[in-house]
Length: 317
Image (cartoon, rainbow, N blue to C red; front, side, top):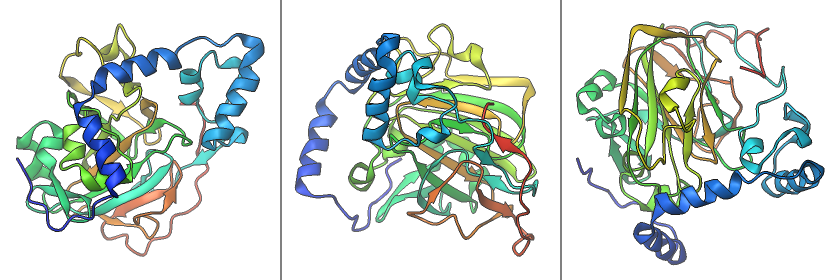
């Protein structure tokens, strides 16, 4: 399904030329090669200086890192680091959907005619994003939220709501970058890139959490179903793809704030909510940086309800 564009805002000529080259490049092969480099072991005496330089270069807050730097054997191990206990918290309101990641809010809005906004002038098909067009009507009139993770961000994805997971899916695709120039320039980017998703039946209805892969290492691992990723440990960017879909009987229980997935180098998370169930909070606006657990949406009818401070903190899963 191709969505007509309406006067999209395009990046500069230099970015357009670079993206044109990437269209022709062997994206998966290059990303796997970068993954092998990121996995190279660092001798223990060199870990602290090497990883400190890496952290400073990309802007990581070392005060939030769970382990001493010398305990991370590779760049990739540091990249998927966990947070120290107590570094994040979740609202006490059980109807609040917290941010599943540290990231930057991109496009937000209403799902209309089976589409969501990618960038100004560009929309994409929700059915194609989910890899199952028949599921799109369940989100018509609902809300979508796009969250971009830069290299400096914490790269584990947590459940924005609690409930049960009836289905998860791996959707093969390309590995274009997901930075602002790419989002502005490449049509249907989120529905074209490789992605891993799960759906959570919750008090807010069925919420979709879509982890979109991107150029670079592009691995996505699953915490809610580790066996799905065997033997490699991740589902995306593999020579041989894992089973495309997992249906759970009974559905898998998941607590709000529990770890769902992890990006091995950065990308984007898209949340989909059904109609009538939620309203956006004031912090859920494009361009705002959010932290894991901050309330993005609340149940409809609780528009004026405050979010009491939670006693539940997040560090280890």
